[in-house]
Amino acid sequence: MATSQPLKIDNSAFSTGEDQYGAFKVERRGIELIPESERRMTPGALFWLWAGGIWNVEFLVYGALIISFGLSFGQAVLAIIVGNVFYAFLGLASLPGPETGTTAFMVSRAPFGLNGNRVVSLFNWITQVGFEIEGIVLVVLVALAMFSRGGVASSTGLKIGLVVAAVAIQFVVPFLGHAMITKTLRYLSYVFIVLFAVMAVLVIPHVNLSHFHQQASWAVWTTAVVLIVAAGGLGWTENAADYSRYLPRRTPRAKTFWAATLGGAIPSILLELLGAAAFTISPKVTAVTGVPASFASWFFWPFLILALPQLFAINSLDLYSSGVTLQALGVPVKRWGAVVIDTLVAGAVTALVIFKGNFYTDLAGFLNYIVVWLGPWFGILLVDYLLRRGRYNAGALGAGRGGIYWRSGGLNWRALVAQGLGMAAAMIWIDAAFSFPPFVGPLSKATGGADFSWALGIVVAGLVYLALSRTSVRKEVAVSGDGSGEDLAAAV
Image 1 (cartoon, rainbow, N blue to C red):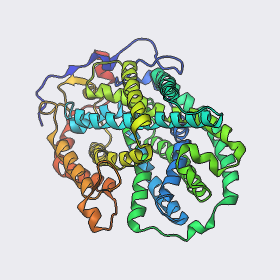
Image 2: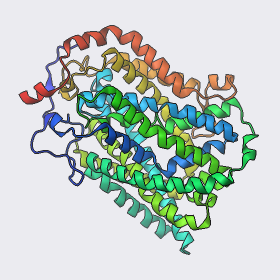
Image 3: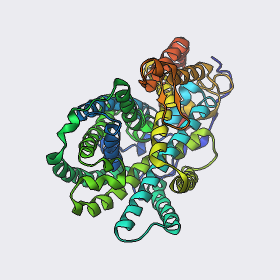
Image 4: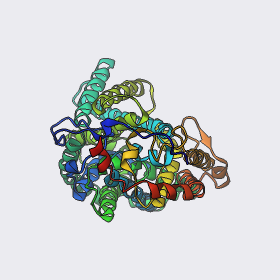
């Protein structure tokens, strides 16, 4: 463990001045450490932030999508319940936020080192932008369906106009920042809960019970679970600390854990179950624009009008996180500037998908492959958190160079080796036969197409990191101070 480099503080990590936190202010803090004076979030607010993002038509579609693989309704219910248990991952990944007052990929510097962390930060930035593209594409498809229903034919000019409009609207809430996202999602969640109740009343009496009798293979069922885990509990871990960092440091860990876990799991389970039930009435529900086909004809306009703000809302979570990840990657830009960059990139790729892509095939492949890096990263982050018992030196996380997490040239080879081996393990047990590029790992072939890539990646990377780092991390904790960063901030 190399610690001889001088600690070079990035002064932006300890910016001072008037209170910047407010729903209608542009949040100027990005990866900077949040002082206690501005940490006014409560566990209840964290619950509603996640609930507000996930009370969303996307999760209705995920439930329909897995039953479309050939699962019986009973198998789909089991996959949904099992897959959503892993929102516990979101709860665990939220714990470092209050402790450090900084974002997920600043916390990730602890196991990886400043420069080693750039590798996984790049993976995350690509993933976040991918989810943003998914959301904007869905917005455009919904708007096209609404124009079509109103008698306006689709055209190149209309598509271009809708992409530009969607990108412009999407930009606003993430640009304003954390407080605006928190407030917006809370109030939108109330609206969508009412919409969900109406949908349930319309669907449940018409569920086709014959879907209880068909049976899919074990391998197909595991593929359904991968989709639920990737789109849910594991798929949100890289965003977790970005939002929990505004909780006061004294917040009980149990409250942080349950607020994030239940805020994600409850709406996800309910919406996916409803989506699976709706599929038994109309297979068109696998597309957002086809969802109203499962309901009364009068429901078309209310549903899609309310679906639009929800799609913008969930995308705000990804766009905010992609911005702070771009900063953690080392791009010298303010948080709001990173939002501008990511919005433009997502808009450009959205146009390509609208005109050239096969959206639902691309989406399935995207969800298949992101777990290859994400599972190992989460396994390493979790083991590192447990080894140091949740104690970080926030000042060293915010340092531009030197300090306890600098190690050798800003690289921790132990974490990078664990990440690489975890990703290799994930590829051994992946079934991405219908993705691009198509690939089926040897363990998947040997088990009839089963896919446990996400689980194997977490376990292998976590165990390798534990074996390589148990002693070194404990030594770091012994010399790292109380981890608050407050004394260091005052000194600067």
